[in-house]
Length: 487
Image (cartoon, rainbow, N blue to C red):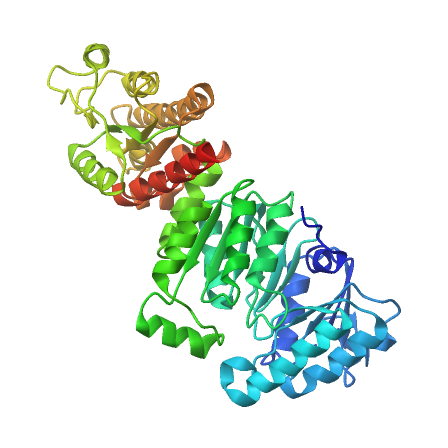
């Protein structure tokens, strides 16, 4: 096993950092980066560096790195491209080993920028300095230091997910999307042009990072395909990796070259490589969200056989189509299972899979139906569709201008309580049967943040927002489970 050097760890757990190019001018990244680092509540010591200022945001400013009263762990460089080399020379003289270069104007701009980037790369390699960037958005490391050296002002909740992205704005979008879903962030790395440290280096680090449970990587292009393959093989044995690979079309490849200077390579080769290594390829930010949702909240299924329980027939049909297209099997119910469900559902229920509960279901029957499907040895996972409306309906009744009539408030409380019991039941059944239950709800259910959603999220169970998204996410979870079984 490769040992992670201290100079890599310094990026994610620095006890002190300097921001070279810190500014009072909020039109400049030097002001924004310093502001956002302070906003995030960084637990270490911050040293802004600017020869023309005495203090910024009430923090004392130092003229040069050499004037700081200690050798800092990490230097963040936000000066014009032409001045970066002189800062690196001072970094080398002081014996500092870790730098983030936010500054753009390198290989993404053409030949003159490439020449400057090559010069910087040779310098840091010669002197043993590790460099993130250039042309990057910065990084987040919420555990343990609450470090948000980042262009956008975002302070996510700490959590299990880490991101390495060759695009700063895609990385930022992923942080926002996952935060909305209720997933916390451990690290978020904007690797930029990768003059020194690459996506492969960061994937290796995150694979060994005990705080990271799930890795997401946005890739435009990789110089060393073999190193990527070998690293993914090692990492996916320990934790899941979701890859969002762009540049799959001619237009995308051209855009990538002008963005970070990356050469994207053949898309089919990447797809084959990801499949061989157990990495899960997502085709958009939405799929990344969905895959992360199930990977962080559900056990791995042992097979592809799915039972579907739905509170509406249409969603069940959509789910059946989506599951089969995703390579999963909507199994035929055994006669014994049908007989058990007959005792729980109205006489006119569908008697098939998907199990459509239809109107007239007895109180508590939904939970018992779910339990019946999970108990079947021939069912590996269950998709649960259309739940959560009870708490929404209950809130609407309680907030009605007529709520004082006909015991409406009491009825609203009954609906809300029933949904909370369903949520607790889902959590308990997952623990009991060690099979995934993928709840799919209307987006409005999540937006309203009712008691059903709150109760599930409190217990780490996150929701999907359409049968199609649920099916694709469950398929990804299943593929990763199969990969782990094979190895």
